[in-house]
Image (cartoon, rainbow, N blue to C red; front, side):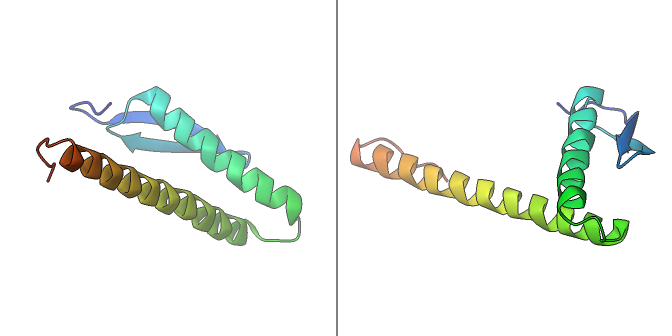
Length: 94
């Protein structure tokens, strides 16, 4: 959950420490760092010859793909909910 002031949290990604400043709570920032580390580690294991930059770009693409899938699923569910509300005679959401 967002707070009024920015939190500084150190996360470890691919063996390197990064200080991240954000409004999310520290636990959320840690989870984000752990997710990035896990995705990058999986890519590194499968492709040990890639540079760290290449691993980071592939990780960014994979995470962006996850985000797009979740957004598409959300939109589909929202449309289904709106259809059900319309069929039930309820008010539609914007």
